[in-house]
Image 1: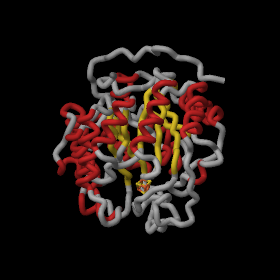
Image 2: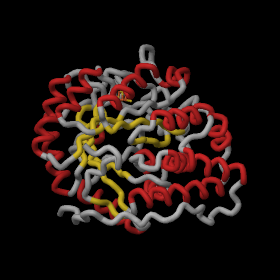
Image 3: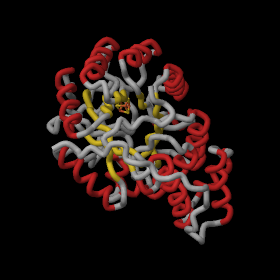
Image 4: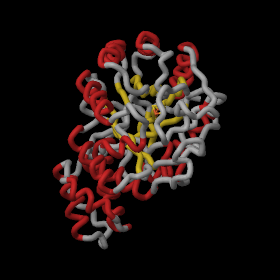
Amino acid sequence: MPLPLISEAPVADVTPDVTPDVAPDVAPGSKRLIDRLSADGRLPLADFETLLSSPSDADRAYARVRAADVAQRQFGNRVFVRGLIEFSSHCRKDCLYCGIRKSNREAERYRLSPEQILACCAEGYRLGYRTFVLQSGEDARYTTEVVTDIVRRIRAAYPDCAITLSIGQRSTAAYQQFFDAGADRFLLRHETADSEHYGRLHTAGQTLESRLACLSDLKEIGFQTGAGFMVGSPFQTVHHLAKDLVFLSEFRPHMVGIGPFLPHHRTPFGDQPAGSVDLTLFILSLVRLMLPTVLLPATTALGTARTGARDAGIQAGANVVMLNLSPPEQRPKYLLYDNKPVSGEVFEMTEAVRRSLSRIGYDIVVDRGDHPKEIR
Ligand code: SF4
């Protein structure tokens, strides 16, 4: 049964910018910084470090209510759903945190054919999805031509849908070709804005510089561009997180993916602790205040880390959820971290999310869900 069409659900009235009377215990210093971030869209590195050092419950509550208020003004109670199609679990890279890294010999590998990908889109479209996110490891078998052909076929079959790619680092020419074929958005998390930290999460030959060059190309070409990082990744400090926020404030991506680090037992970080859900939620709120119109998912990792955390992410300022349209039998093979949810029919999963969000006052909508300033 398709999602009931909620066309043009009204966005909440814009009301004067008032500071909500919440969290009376918020520390004056934190309140001042959160208010300044909201007003200016940026903060100096040292101020981010102060905010992130040890936020109190009241600090987090204050940021959350302010961020939810901003999200309401921009998007009303609408939450955009994305249909994720994980089309290849092969990867030539070896990121130390990732369950499908090349060196994980136990990972089962699979590839979806263009026809299988289109079948996932058909199922998603029937259920009301209007954005398809094509994600894979960095798999050379999907050449520029192959990906371009897939994008063209989806674009022709679903002219009213957005196509998002999340397939890693490619040449500028390849990115341009994907865009020209009809891809609208590209997700490429920067992972950490500190080169030394980047080096500790990746293997030789992977550099922050090349990652950022790709992000810059994508934005230049015209993609709605997504950056992002993990909270609590190994070796991460408050200084690194502050650098991530400064980077976002300068790069100003259209989308930001942030989730807690979750270990995978077959990686070098398998025994590392998971990242903090509370800190992730606080950072989501700060990002919403800094980039009011950003497309901000309450990520699967967040929902995996703690029951109810996906809804908490929406209440903290997120406005997107991503659900898995991949064939159920392949999902267990795309295990980026332990306990990633892999079961469930798309219809049931969608309905469960809809019910859960409606209990907190939000609706998932049939909509491409573009960035408000970037509709082509
Ligand atoms: S994070 Fe991406 S590029 Fe790195 S190993 Fe995993 S799938 Fe490959």
